[in-house]
Length: 87
Figure 1 (tube, rainbow, N blue to C red):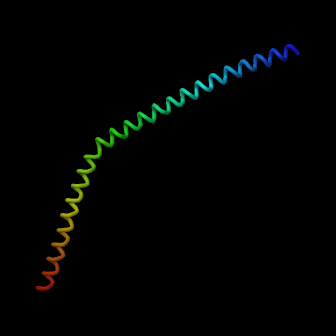
Figure 2: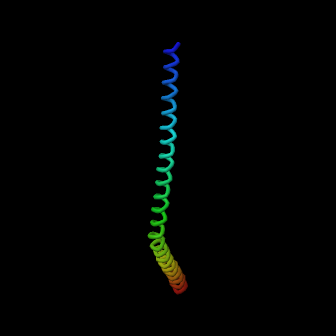
Figure 3: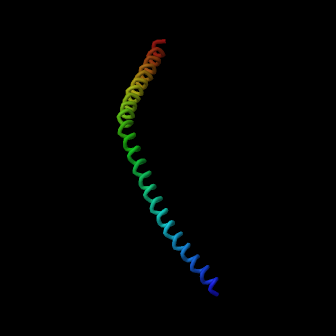
């Protein structure tokens, strides 16, 4: 029986070591995940700050172009109607 008891004690010691290693690995993984999340958050915020003014300017330019196109279409339609009345 002493051989089995020795094996059980040895297995219990290994189990305790494994528990310690597992908890340490979980802690490291948690820290790593937090670090990655923080870096991602900072990168996204920085990108938004950089890109937002450019996007606003592009939208403003697109609105100006759209206004011009609509005015051109209106003018073309009016000219077409005026030509049809004369003819």
